[in-house]
Length: 319
Image (cartoon, rainbow, N blue to C red; front, top):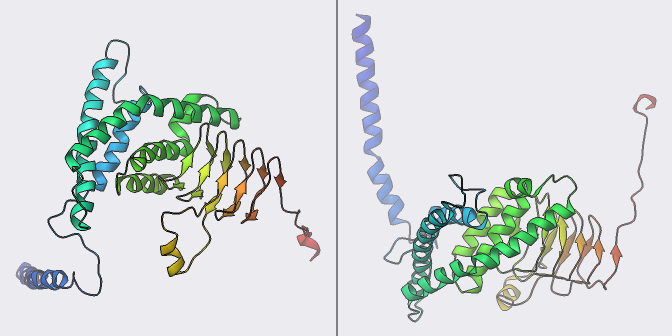
């Protein structure tokens, strides 16, 4: 008898589930009908769009090429390195060119732009990136050395390449910056925002950064689009190189114009310093102390620090 009751109960539950599931098509129909209402965003239509997952995959295909032997899925030596890199780079070229073509064609169709030969351009840009790999490696080698020379906690270069979030973010930035300079839409920002989500370091792909750049620790660093950074610059966690807040009209008028600071050669910026606006030009060899707020120029060879706050130290037992 008990088994019969349990079976009846199970049948009732199954029917309830079926009745609930039967409502899903109507709910979906309602969701779809509202996509074009109230200014909601969607990407349903014939125009292609790059794949975020594929672009993140491209980052991880580039790393073993830029740092051969470190991120490869097999041990490399003089016997197999040409075969390995030949296969990896050829596959990278095909995937990168395909995603660039999607990005260019997306803008052409969605924004009614004139034809820009998206297939030819994508192949040319992808090939240009492959040709630029030695230059990227040289730049990144100087970044690795800058990290080693600037951080006594680092034991060797391998530790920096494997472990330092600042180097990961800088590497992704240098990849994305090449694509940004060659007019590739969307993909560079997807790359740098992925690095941001992984490291807490936000570097816009439009930033201009010189050689031997070092971000120590890195969490909370923000570097805005039109920032210019010279050679041998070192910054610490929480530093913001940003723009001043604008209203809607000002924002439109300053789009694609200089809005962010300029940091000249050999500058050190300590933790949680905030430097805002295009007037903020930090002269060469200057040192900016922690928690400083700047919106104007600083001459070369200058130290900027806050006065020490007054500390209050009490014995808890005497209170």
